[in-house]
Length: 404
Image 1 (cartoon, rainbow, N blue to C red):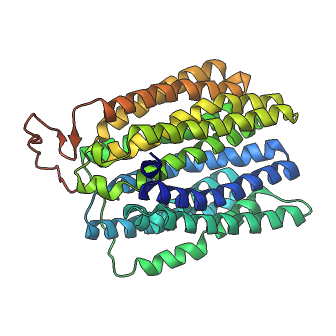
Image 2 (cartoon, rainbow, N blue to C red; image 1 turned 120 degrees about the vertical axis):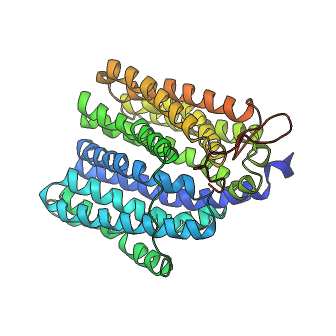
Image 3 (tube, rainbow, N blue to C red; image 1 turned 180 degrees about the vertical axis):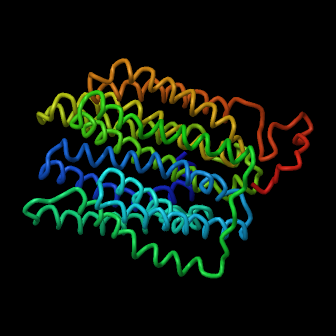
């Protein structure tokens, strides 16, 4: 039992998560410090800008995230150059627009910086070594936190524009290194097919699902409520990334096994991991309530505890479904869940961050249930699709490249 739980995949997950949370803890401490120094409404404004940047970055970057574990080495290296160059271009555009307005300039610049930085981290993730990627991520987060906090703690009248500019500067050293690593690998044009459209459609739905709720709460309730909900959702998405890290350690074996679920994460350790993380959020909510934290904040965290369980499980299922090439299925489920989430949120958003947490809980229950059934209860699936009784995949069309 212990041997099964502490497999190489589990140990790799623990190391990757350790590096990731080194950066996430720094980021969360920075957010608390910023809210204390500049006010929760100012932090809420910053969180809304971050959400907008994700709405830009996720649809543009998801194509490369999906292709990364599936394509051959030469194609991957060309994609990485394309991803890096496109991200740097957006970063430069956003930085140029920043003096004219924080929300627009920072959102575009941060989106580009994240895309380019994801390119820099993509090779170790593709090879099943997320710890190496998160080591870079932690270093970047620490650098950003140090230079921005030093500014707003010492400036007489700190501005969000300068904080945004310093955040973008923190990416530069890592992107310079990525540029050297990408030398000699020519950028390639993204594939323009129905498969690409499905992947982008999923990404747009995922971006709306994960970020637009912060923007909507800020618009219909208050920037303070957006700030409280941003705290809670930051913790949920951070903890759920442990599940993602766990599933990443199966990338190579899943790819070699043509996406068969038996080569991926088993249901029992996935469930144990998810429940443990959910209990952690529940404990945080109890500590907040006992210590006199704002009512809206601790209630939000209490509702988000079961969301953490669901979100962690769905993160694991998503990786399996990606390697299985089930792109159109994921797109449909993502949009269905987003529709559920925002139908609820529009009706109750005036109640602030707890309302957003309730909408998150219901929609994630829908998404995780469908994903879980697809991975663990559907007929055996590989990269070629559902197989017949002899294990033979259906005939591929002329545009279906089985390599990705």
